[in-house]
Length: 56
Image (cartoon, rainbow, N blue to C red; front, side, top):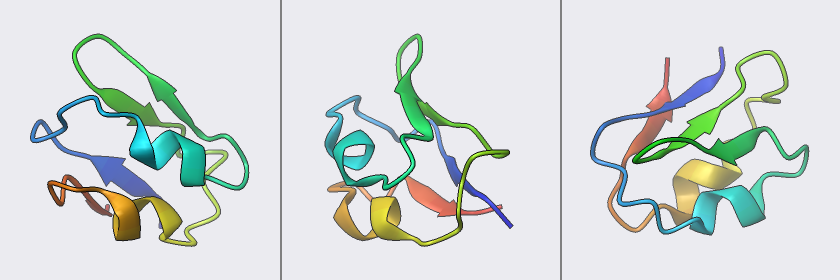
C-alpha cells in the first residue's frame, strides 16, 4: 500500500529528499508520490513537518 500526500502539503520538499527511490516529485501546489514506485517504507511520512503524508 503506497503512501499519499494530502492537501495539507506546504510544498517544503523535505519528503522528496528522504525517498530512497525518488518516487516523490513536485506538482502544482504540492508534492506527489508515484504509487507504482513507492516502496511503502514510510521515510517520507516520518519527516513531513505538517503530517500531510499517510498510507492509502
